[in-house]
Length: 273
Image (cartoon, rainbow, N blue to C red; front, side):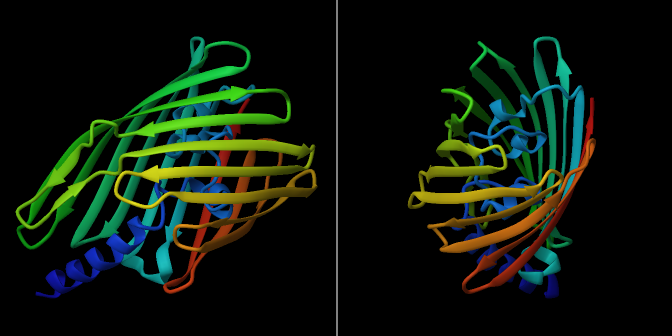
């Protein structure tokens, strides 16, 4: 009975959480940017735009993150990401886990991206989702696919496009039918200066209103960055900072919801050149 009560509470909160965002939070850097970054590039793009895992010179990268939603341990999520140069492109993996003993969501994703030209990048991603529910509700799974594009207009302006789960995969149980998110997103990145970047994303989930997010990243010193963002769907705010020496990065963020409060997040990224 205790697990069932917790599970019921989880469903109420999880439905509210899903209405906030059209993607999992892609590490603390993007968390501080209100998960804005469809047109950006990093190993964490495995949770945003498959084409974005194409980065400059690094042979491989790896990262880990932890998000504690609203200071409720049962709503925490953990992510592991990695990418590796492979032939003319780059291969990436994502492992995502969310929930607690009575309700757990897991995601495993494989991504391949490559440059189609000097300015044009494309990526595809296959995802496996699994939901495990206690009290005899069982295990349920589904497969989805994502497709992403990025184009550099010049050194300052990049645009991106992502289509997630176009086939409308679903998780069906005896007590609920849940469609996995089907989303189309567009993004813009503008390098206003060497140490100042503006980002904007627009996302439309088939079941939700459009979400517009705006973010800014400023690096007053070479190894330090300050970040902030806002999104319209949940009227949420985010902020944070990062420290990034030559081969690794430590990022901290806090996401604020006007009803449910703060969600702290931390991530670590390592780059091997």
